[in-house]
Length: 115
Length: 110
Image (cartoon, rainbow over all chains, first blue to last red):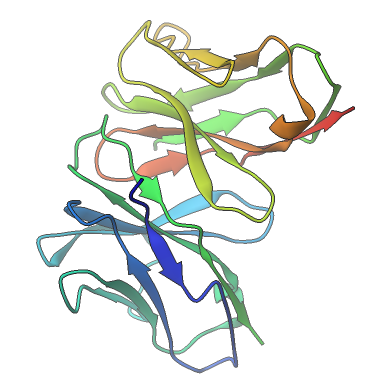
């Protein structure tokens, strides 16, 4: 069964450093998403991406964040200068279509720890 | 704005007990409703969904009915197992993004 994959599973970085979180969505999916979950809190939407551009972004997704689909398979989230409060689990998701009833398939997540 | 409210956890039950996790939502329009489950150390998995009023989603013995009149989507299971121990997230999707509740941690004791 096709699945969304994410690398690395755990990333430790120093405050102020840049990190890139990588995702490989399901191959025939057209819509891509990033969510994050701060430890013990709810999952929050960050950004959605379709046709090589951002469709929607939340207040969390400020200028420090960017997303890219550099080739036909990867979808990346970059944080330019990490802060302590960026420590969280980051989930990538993809869906075939952008309709409300379409399932978004989630990856296993990358745990980001900022020291 | 759009939101999802679900009962606080943790919820601790004995094996074979009846489970209810309450969930209510506020949304514009007619969102699709979901329950996601997160097992320890794993990502989010879709447990069940309902896309319109009075639809019942079901999977692995879990059920939830889309109640438009009460804006609710309560999760139920008649007889829980130890393997059901996880965090359960109620969610809705009206457009592009999914809005999640805070999650309810469920502990099932053997």
